[in-house]
Image 1 (cartoon, helix red, strand yellow):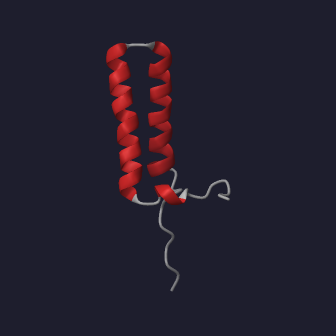
Image 2 (cartoon, one colour):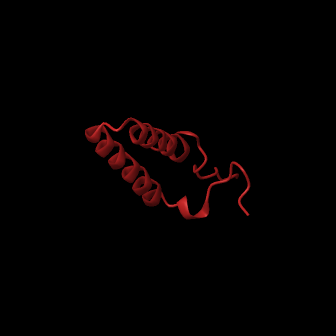
Length: 67
């Protein structure tokens, strides 16, 4: 079981996190064109969460090696 604050093992490789974020950003672009308020909000929130959790929060940063 994954504890809170630990990275999910499937998302540890960078290319998977980039792919998930790109899908969310593509969905956001699509909803921006469609201008459907609820789905635009959901796409914005999911893209923002992916950016924060995968790249800005240091959850997936490799631990420094101790000498």
